[in-house]
Length: 376
Image (cartoon, rainbow, N blue to C red; front, side, top):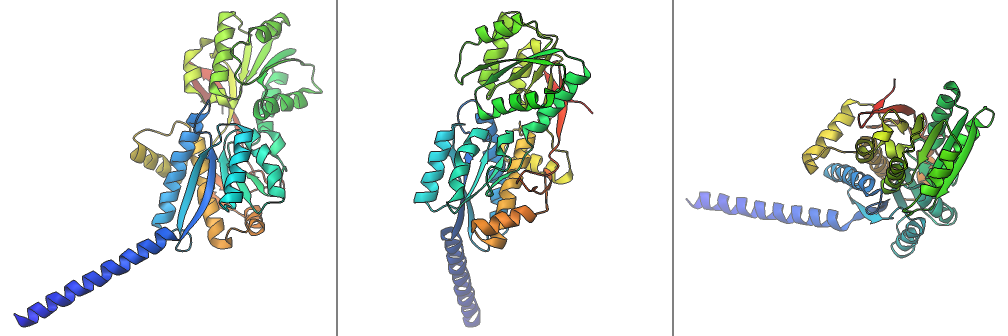
């Protein structure tokens, strides 16, 4: 009995020591952290993009920490709402860089937010990896801005090819006055420059509740086709609602990727039936399928923006890998990303000489019965 008592005491002591060791290991892990800041549109007209981005990013964060974090340090992503507002994004960057000492940033959606931050990266010791930012103006904007997505230039090129092939002689463009929406218009004009197609353009400022005068002008121009390029889903809804009210239904309608991705708009406006859209396509693969299953298991809903979920998940994983190998020095990280060949759930990721994602392919879609169907 005495021997048994001694053994029991030793076991209790050993368990106590183990608990203390695990406590201090966890405490040390939780106190020692590597933090990056994610600037997402968590409110406003593109909040559904930000929601999908944050949820998929958090899956990546949890996987990274379950595997030991960043060289033993806990990996933390601080999610901030840039509201799709360039000035808000700039203010957040200055706040977290200057006051918080954060050196690594990621973002999703709203090209203007990246263009607002880019000049600050020239002198500050920070780097930005962005997903779902598409204006051609981002190409080469800074040695420390990397784009994990395709450029809208490729989308506009697809539309121009369709316009030329269909021998469309006149096309109207209604676009929101933002870097993204205007960028598509500019690229379309570039690719149609030497064609016979005439372009009639009308713009509206963000927040406009009435675009009837712009639509009426385009209607009076007797256009054969119309390209609709809003910044947000609500803006797209204003255009489509008032097109319906004016009974303005051009023979052919082209829509940007914001409308193409919006099941709400596609199912609400019959005028879109037969419309042509485009989007950056992520091919299904085993790792992609695993991510989508994890997303559903964790949140109880499917990811409604699958290419965004895949792209943002990869961006977080790629940044964590880069920091693990190179630390947070922006020169070392930039050099790492320029040479990287990363196999992600969204496909192979590498960056060209302008820091744009290589081989980012856009595909055409046709809207049928409220659904965007990819055209092979």
